Image 1 (tube, rainbow, N blue to C red):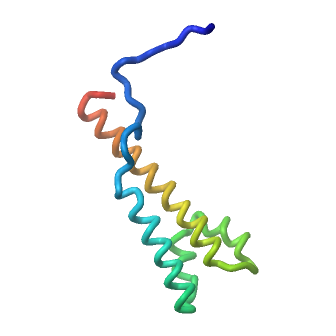
Image 2 (image 1 turned 180 degrees about the vertical axis):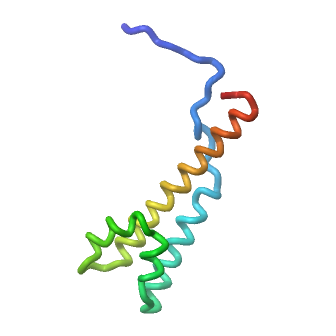
Image 3 (image 1 turned 135 degrees about the vertical axis):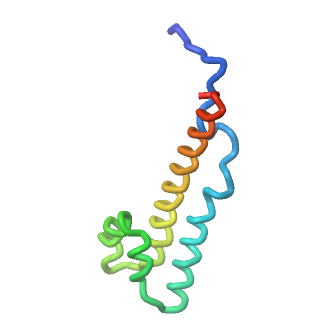
Length: 100
């Protein structure tokens, strides 16, 4: 049996509910992907909007359906970014209140 360390005043960042704002950009991204796919539009704007991730996604999309890869991987990319921003803001708020 090992020693257990407990800290009574620390709460993990994000231990509560995730803000609805975290889901806003990924949802908009997915809607844009579906709109571009259904309208037969060009994926150039989506490539530019997803810039860092689009380089990696392009490897997979070269000859496959871009809706699947940009819709899935691009949306996950924006969820990751939104979540990281939310965690940073929550950490900053916690420090400003003196809880961290």
